[in-house]
Image 1 (spheres, rainbow, N blue to C red):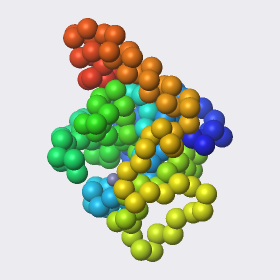
Image 2: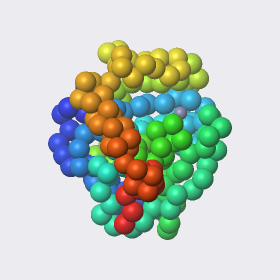
Image 3: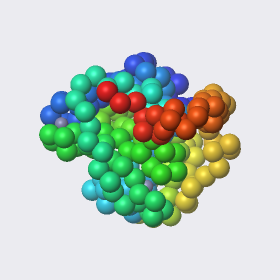
Length: 180
Ligand SMILES: [Zn+2]
Ligand SMILES: [Zn+2]
């Protein structure tokens, strides 16, 4: 289950501590992505991302800088980095837009509290990475309705309804996420 045991809020930040943030609720879902793009961007063998509504990420200090970065889909992503130490704290992908942040779990003070809910793109995982039994794993992507808990699906529906209800200027706000 999605971090059911995680005590909240969870706090995190960059290495120089200029950027600090807090997750005000559990994430929607936690991906462990073994795609070659995540391997390159992390410099490691997979990326661990907690998907969460942008409004549930409270900025405590600093102002991450959004860096346009190519993505596998071709649509691009924006990686939020500390303007000083340049550590990446979260990403926005074109698919989910700015309303959702993919928070890098390794930037949390206690990253062990958000283990993966699913392993994705395992077709390109490093051969020495042995996946644990009991956690879903898929060769590429997956069907959200099959894997997300009902609460997360409901939160996603609510987010989409909010976006649809708003007229053009307001939904523009939602697309650019909370500004501080
Ligand atoms: Zn920093
Ligand atoms: Zn990936």
